[in-house]
Length: 245
Image (cartoon, rainbow, N blue to C red; front, side, top):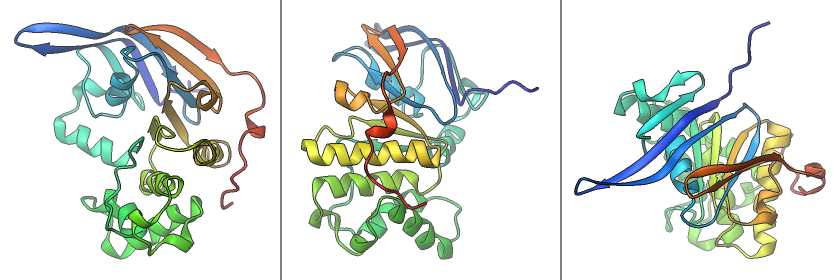
């Protein structure tokens, strides 16, 4: 029987920033695996390195030591162009600030990741509509993003992250700008995507209630891994958003 490879494997990962020749270490040698289909939360206080970790895992930054393997391939061997392709095709991002174009329709916002892709123009609307249907916003498809509530805007951001059917979805404090009701709705959507659609989700958060949606919590402190545990309880009881089958 062949061994199942993790979608992400990091070994003794290090990251330092350099300013006028002075190194500031942020990650001090972190190792873990994430399997396809897992929902993992990365937690830690401010300055723990969790956001830097997400940027490296999502190909927005590069590590300065150790190893990072994505789908079994050593990321350090990729060119900048290859990393850009991976970032466009293999990962989706959801940010605290939504990062939507304000005077642009929901449909066109969701199509943005397809703009520089090789997806034929005639297929892009259908791909975007499929993602919009998944988050339940077909009735808003022609609305401008600045006409939506905060919760709806974050669901548009989720649809945008889904449109290219990525291997991994990264969510960086996705409920940070939302009230508790909208925050719960967004987390319900992410949970359903994991449980029913099988998406791998990596969530960065400082909120315990948000992290409880994950099946596993990795804790960083001062650039070191200080915890890696499975969550307790039945995650199936958390979600209430019913996604399209």
